[in-house]
Image (cartoon, rainbow, N blue to C red; front, top):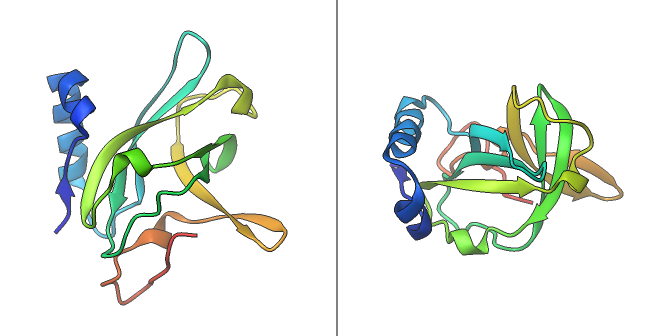
Length: 150
């Protein structure tokens, strides 16, 4: 069973209203869980894009902690891309945890509209880049699909 947890720093700084909103989104999920469930997006005073998602480790193995390229999309179109390591997150199996990805202004390919959001992991497949769908991280118990993180 999937469990919702908050990183220690989040527990000290997030408002009760935001905690409740995250709990409501987590509780409302049905079917297979998305690895990166969008919660909200915003721009800060420097024009950096802040993308807050629920990172969901639905498998039994270790979550990869090396640096990887993450892509922010709106209505299926790439808006920003940047490299991140989720080592600090320390995500355990069957745990969901909110996390904010910060895409500096210079990593944005176009102006964000902050609607129709999705976050994906980009993988290298030989010389061409490909996007991994949200179902790429389904539980190892799923009879339909079992893939590993790239």
